Length: 369
Image 1 (tube, rainbow, N blue to C red):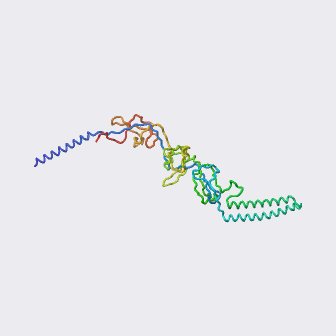
Image 2 (tube, rainbow, N blue to C red):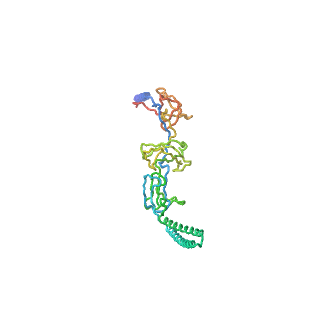
């Protein structure tokens, strides 16, 4: 019995020792850890921030009537090109009963006064012909008579204007005909035949009949978050991309940054504007959504490496990379960096094109288990 136990113990020890030796052998036989390396290259680096917005005309003119009424005819539609003084629409006057009645009463009053002055003038003219009164006295009566005639004429004209919006002698000044005040394209006709419109005056901005603009002078209008506003300034170049126009970029210049931000959805936004340098062959419709890449800095054909290769000293926070010196030997090299676009960073000094830079992630060689 004791002999069997002894044999079992010896066998167990031999097996355990053999397993340990095999494990150590396998451990020592594993391939050493190696690292990938990459080299620097010449890159064009552009540092930019993006603003969202839309394309709008530089100046949009709203055409409003100077008399209230109903749209009787419309002569243009959206997209038409107009010159200054071109006819846009015609308004039919719906007279106010009170104003119409007052105008009629004014005619009657002026008629009574004119009849009286006519009789007086004829009487005084007869006396002058007989040599009873002087020419000076007749001239005074004649002036009063002419004033009465003019008052009667003005009362009739006022009645016509109240009733129809125009009268004889006004010609193109008739305010029932709405004309373009500038040259440009019709962007919008927000009214239709039969719509009532209100005149523009000191107490009411009036109804917009048409919106006109020069579509060759367009701007980008967008908003920038407060976290980016400190990085931009007026005069910076913009690259405008319009979602509806594929594979086309428009150059622009940032010429306005709002001095005051507005709180929107929990973040402060600042309005910006940039004037487009638009090609005449490309038509951009007003109101299209667009993105503006604001070029903060740009460097062409500079020595650069991927940002992922850069390490930072935990104490000094200075950047450095590890340069390969041997099969498993890497040397720290301090570097001086320039601008970055988030992928590549410019290298001002510290490394050359021939240097092999250590990639952080360790890998196993091909064929390793």
